[in-house]
Image 1 (cartoon, rainbow, N blue to C red):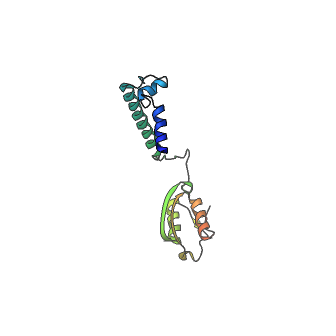
Image 2: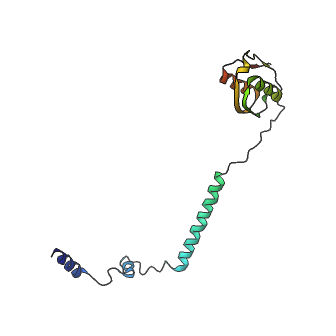
Image 3: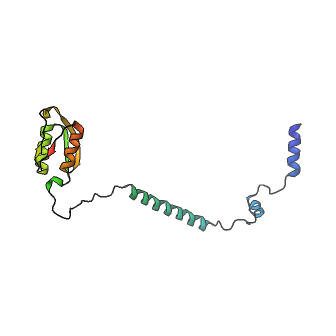
Length: 147
């Protein structure tokens, strides 16, 4: 009974073309939407593809790491201040200090008596002064480079 009232109400208010796409566009004042022709749809799709590809290229290029640049000093640099990379893998401190001497051409003083008990694993890139300072910070020693 209640259901019959609802059907009657819909049937009284129904009008032909109420669900027509064409008439919907006309009620909005746009006619039958001639501005969406097949050529315009194809052009819009092509533009979307080009913009997406361009964005992809820019994102890909921005994620790549820049090529490393080598810094060349403008004047003569003492080997002590040259930036070099050194790797140590569970190396005893006397071997580490010998490597520093050979790599940077410096003389190291204040080597602790128990230097054999210290082991170092480190990748270092920098100059001799900073490396010795880093070793002192790690082990609490007072190793120095002779002037």
